[in-house]
Amino acid sequence: SDCSFLIYLSEVEWFCPPLPWRNHTNTPTQHTQHIKSPKRQVRKLHLNIYDKEILTILIHVGFLTEESGDVFSPKVLKGGPLGEMVQWADILTALHVLGHNLKISMSVKELQGFLGVPPGRGSCPLTGPLPFDLIYTDYHGLQQMKQHMGLSLKKHKCHIRVIDTFGTEPAYNHEEYATLHGYRTNWGYWNLNARQYMTMFPHTPDNSFMGFVSEELNETEKRSIQQNKVNNMAVVYGKEASMWKQGKESFLEILHRYMEVHGTVYYETQRPPEVPAFVKNHGLLPQHELQQLLRKAKLFIGFGFPYEGPAPLEAIANGCIFLQPKFQPPHSSLNHEFFRGKPTSRQVFSQHPYAEQYIGRPHVMTVDYNNSLQFEAAIQEIMRTKVEPYLPYEYTCEGMLERLHAYIQHQDFCVPQPPFIPANFSRLGSASGSRVIGPLFVPLPNSTALGWASNATAPTAWPPLSSLRLLVSQEGQSCVEACQSAGWICEPAHFPFINNKDALRGLEVQCEVVDSEINHILPAFSVMRRECSLQREPLLFSCAGHSPKYRRLCPCRDFLGGQVALCRDCL
Ligand code: UDP
Image (cartoon, rainbow, N blue to C red; front, side, top):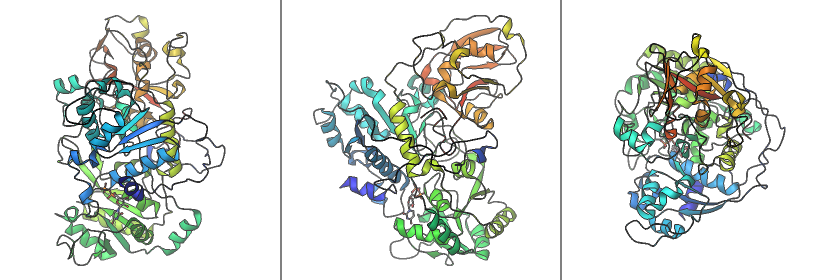
């Protein structure tokens, strides 16, 4: 069946071993270092999957339906994209392992059947209650639900989770704002809470990081890999011939001077002309054989495309060093065809930013491929360097289960959001008199500082407010960057708690006026004009937003080592 086909692609084991707990410690120092998983220590079985509510969940994989044009399935065995398949397979498997009751739909007909809407074309409202606690789908599926549920989609949309590889920033998600301010794309504008979009890598903290699973090795396997590494063997990242086109010859030549070059490029009858004769091309390999190849190879080398796939994590987990190109200028929806029309302004500084920022040296080297000296030096260094197989905890079977379980338990987009400041103009008193030096940090150990403690109606926040670290960005800096530079992560769920005059006062910001507007960079202030603005539209709270004239109020939070989606008190 379709389902077993997807599960076949997955690397999640059907029944994971007992889940040991680890000692989460992270010291806020250098970004690439503190995120790495600390040494694990069995401490406590924290994920008690047998003691929880069993949900009824619909999984509607829109991009695999015939109605969406299904461009992926025919290319599965021909070098086409597989990352999305890997992620869906792992989501299905993880939800199953967590014990939930799943219904899986791969066609509009099945979708209609599960939702109880009459078959046929046109939008028929769903009259009764939604027969599911949660629905996991994608943008194609969302469109199909709109067509077939009509207005009832709006009523039920808080139950929906959208699997969205590259993410959707709030400015693109808010229909009216996107239309008025040039953020309208083919995909966004669904007016969801941005955390309902779930990404493949933790690149946009405005969204929830869903991720996937890569195979984790035991100590014996790790030792055997290290003993059998072939020091001069490289595997090229790129299973489609088009990925080898244009301008790759010069650095392939350099690479070939030092190493035996292997490829896994799909071909039908003969070697693709894009692949040089000296490359030992194995053709597209079944997962298991690819893993064997990676276990022998010392280097896994990227040519700049595909972006942010699972393969580099698999290579690093099998003891390879991943070498990838730096992008200068960065790639984005403004200058690169692949990102054009995607609902994000994110700038991509290398082929695999997660590998660069969250893993880093010695497992990952990011260099300028146009500089042949730098490239050659990197190859020499790789041949000298010994590395251990490494997999960030968040991409292990346990890590994915822990994260998904926490989301299911705690993320509730159906409850009203905490209140935010109304649109009144007002003047701040003398507390605003002192100078702003930044970036500032005001520790907020409990909600008192923000005026929530005495408020009996304050909702239970998740992540809990104990994780909140308030910070002011530099001018032109986003909250993603501001929080990252302090060793934290931006937490959009905390915006409502800092969108008020108390927070400005606490930071000793000089405001002559405090107004409230609809703009995705707010809350923020202009130092020059002494103007402070709060956010009026909660859907536009955005970690990603930035403006050259404004310093932003940023709700950062701590996180567990190796599990950036969760704070220390999150579980
Ligand atoms: N893959 C494979 N055989 C190959 C090349 C890749 O099974 O010869 C698998 C790889 O292990 C990974 C998946 O394809 O799990 C997706 O790989 P990639 O990182 O290239 O991402 P994509 O661009 O396909 O989304």
